[in-house]
Length: 219
Ligand SMILES: *Cc1c(COP(=O)(O)O)cnc(C)c1O
Image (cartoon, rainbow, N blue to C red; front, side, top):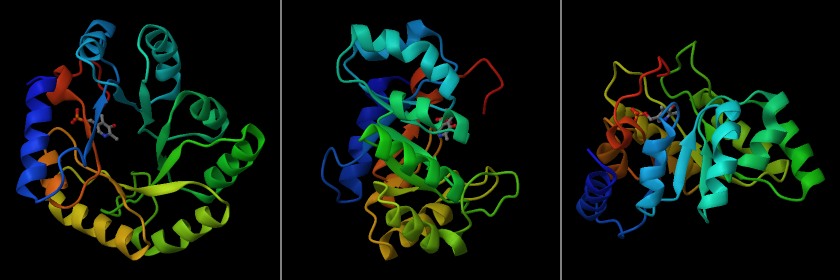
């Protein structure tokens, strides 16, 4: 696989779903990948990337930004409140708003700084105890809570359980977003992004299918 293959598959999935060309943003998930591979994708003109650790993002993206204009960085991993400020400085979008304490911290920092990244609320659609995200039953209230804090909530995000058919989770996420008037849907990874697009994904997070397998044990 390569960037071109994935963009072609995304275009085909958009067309098949009767969606406008370009309605899906491809987030190239560069976590743990060697700089040379990331640079190759930057050289091809791609600009949207995803990282799941603030520390790792801080270590590599400031330098890439010096060489490439228009980098659009998405934080897609769990965010501790003590790293929120750094995350806001680094990323244009945060996909993992998942609890009131983090919402309050982001709101306070947004007031202070005057801007805030686009936010996606992570929903634990599989209700897995070890996974981050608000439970589906709590999602409406949490969306309202974040909006009451004036946070720029653009949509919802999910990571379906590995063992289950992801489409059920994508459909559930789409339903929760629709009833809350949210248009952004961050869902779909290397193995299932076409199914996510069929169900309305606006942002797909694709790592290994673009860059190759990750060597570190970093899911
Ligand atoms: C690593 C990661 C991805 C990308 O996974 P691939 O299977 O390599 O495409 C997507 N979303 C999140 C939240 C991730 O942590």
